[in-house]
Image 1 (cartoon, rainbow, N blue to C red):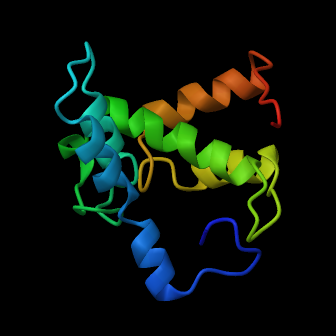
Image 2: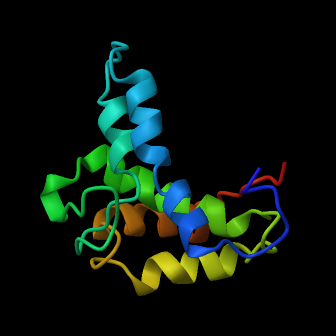
Image 3: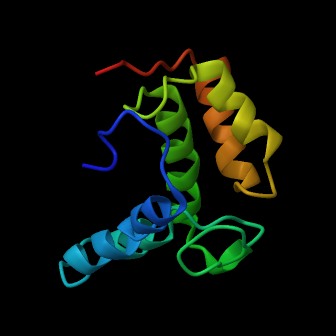
Length: 127
């Protein structure tokens, strides 16, 4: 309901939204996968510099898979329209990850993502 409302999120609403990594983790934590899917979900909003959530993890304390997912999630989220804001577009999304390469986002994951779009002509389709 909050995410589908065409208005800016309030601070309490954003705090509620920030619980989604923990909720997702709780849903699948006991399901066996060949990858650390639970940790990926739990950590996908953590940032290399420790500024993320829910646990403020830094650097290598964040699984490699979650560092990759963080880059992909950021690009997709910025590229896509949300009821509370218009899509920012691919160039803005790529500029975001490039500007924060090595601080918020894993440098190797950013480099791989940029290569996909700039050298391999990867595209995203709008739903």
